[in-house]
Figure (cartoon, rainbow, N blue to C red):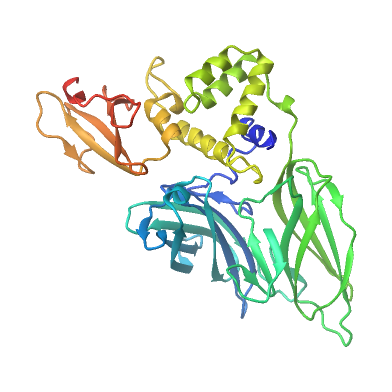
Amino acid sequence: MHRWRVIFFIVLSTLLSFQRARAAPSGPDDGPALSVGDILFGVDATSFRGAQGMAYVEVYLQVHTSYLRFTSEEKGYKGIITVQASLRDSSGQEVSRSERTKTVPVSSLEQAQSRYNVILDQIALPSPPGDYTLQVTITNQGTERMGQCARRIHIPSYDGGGLTLSQIQLASDIHRAEKEGAFFKKGFEVVPNVTHIFPSTSPTLHFYFEVYNLKEAPEKGSLSLQYTILDASEFPVITYPSKRILKPGTSGVKAESLDMTDLPGGDYTLQVEVQDDLTGQVVRSRRRFQLAQPIAEQLLATDEASLHRYYDHIKYIATAKELRAYKGLTPEGKVRFILDFWKRKDPDPETPVNEFAQEHFRRIAYSDAHFASMGSRSQTKRGTDTDMGRVYIKYGPPDEVEDQLMPTADTGQSEVGPSAVGGNLGRKPVQIWYYDTMGRYLFIFRDRYGLGVYELVHSTMPGEHYDPEWRERQ
């Protein structure tokens, strides 16, 4: 068990394993992205040369099964998702599209609903070179649950006549394979590393790339390969010994694994340099990644504001006894308490991140972005301090949301659905959240003064505010 996984989230060097998804991406990006909506998934992509002047993009997906709904069958449970991926040019014209349905089997509902259980998938999109928006949508069949992700992507030309490299694919594992599996590629099984995060517990950088347009000659000649790791300032921190290999022909593939044992944790860039020794031509390709490695405990500040922030992080998920204990400690004791608290929550010490903390801080960020109330000074609240924020952080996203306009004493019936919006004097907005994971529970929030501040007025969740006669207390 490593404390660095806890600090990784508390100091928010990276709030999530992914870059936050951009609804309207601003420029080409080689990093991973995270979805928005009901289904949480990560997206990464790498382009390679295709046929007849075309390229193709491999789209890699990491889907969190806790956001899916499953049905029982003879041997366990299954969820069915539809994955749609497309490339659109700057005018919005669709240039490539792929859609398929995938069955996700699980042995138990506990496995299905675990926030740490993920599945990997891969889709290929043929496309001409250019700048595009990659759009991925996943829907859960039989439900209204959907997640979407959009990011900019640049696809270079691989048929310019000179020596060219594909983009670099980062991998969590690479090995030679004879049979074609889900991630088989030209003699290798290349398991995508969608997050671009590599753990210090196994500090090996796996990657795959392809070389095109090698110069033909009576004797094949050789290639020189140079791998360098650059820091955030693009300064070389590791330069690996160069390699010279025989040309495989006019094109070739390379799968590599580099040792990073002596590299401190941080954000880095892998640079691949290839030289055709016959022509002297040199080409380079780069890919960013992160090495998650133990961070000094001293990085957690002990000033009053920081200690209060650590308390805010855990106030909805810690027990009353734990919160009392935290308040009674010295500043140094509070830091140790926080580290031990998240350490106990880590569901899988062998992974490079604390998955529980990852999801928890995602919920905090979502709550601050979506539930903040903006009124007068006395009514302005951070999203995490509102009733909706507290419920979202503690229980996660609801399975169903219903909007209503409830009448006051002198008005008629309530309105439900899209028609119940705006301009309804005497009616109070109400939103109902339903949770189905462990039964059918609901939370009812009411905007008492029409200012966008929703208060919890009733819930059937055990331990929450229960008031079945809340309508009478308007």
